[in-house]
Image (cartoon, rainbow, N blue to C red; front, side):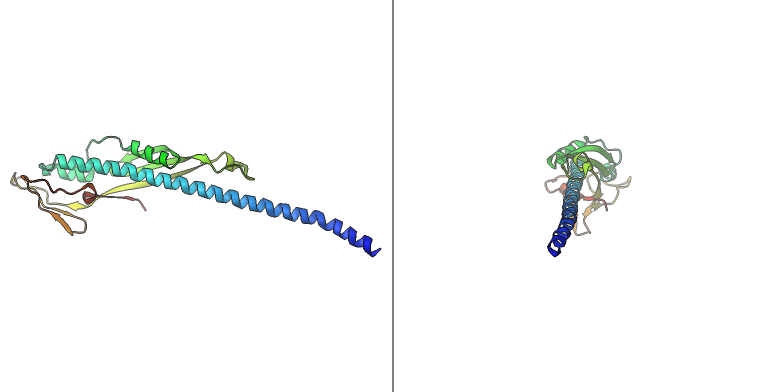
Length: 200
């Protein structure tokens, strides 16, 4: 009788054991799916950050080139450093290029002055898992990059001498350029004139 009862108890415990193991396996796969989704989101965010920075850097380089072209006309410097009314090539091609390198697609690239909003979508889903949505959902992310002028100068007045250029003070005042109109071989580089960073 005792042996029969033991076998009966074992028979009752086995289905519970199977249920518990199945539940644990499901939880393990669910955590794995969540991890995959998190990795996918992080990849999309990396792509968005890179794309926004690329668009801003493209514009920064364009502004720096424009400043070099108009370096002998200080009256135009203020607008160039603030991105006011200047015409430059569309920088969004760089955003799309960097997003593609990070396996994502740009859904929105919105340059507004010295501020660049980029939204991307990952090209791949998180993959098949016990959570059905992960097999069809693609991660989205956005980022904002800004260009910050690093230099100050005195705006020339009406009585300013034509052959004298304003002194350019950049960074935290630790770098100055005394520009000589007759020798413009030593001009600031784009990174000296502007800082590019992600917005907080």
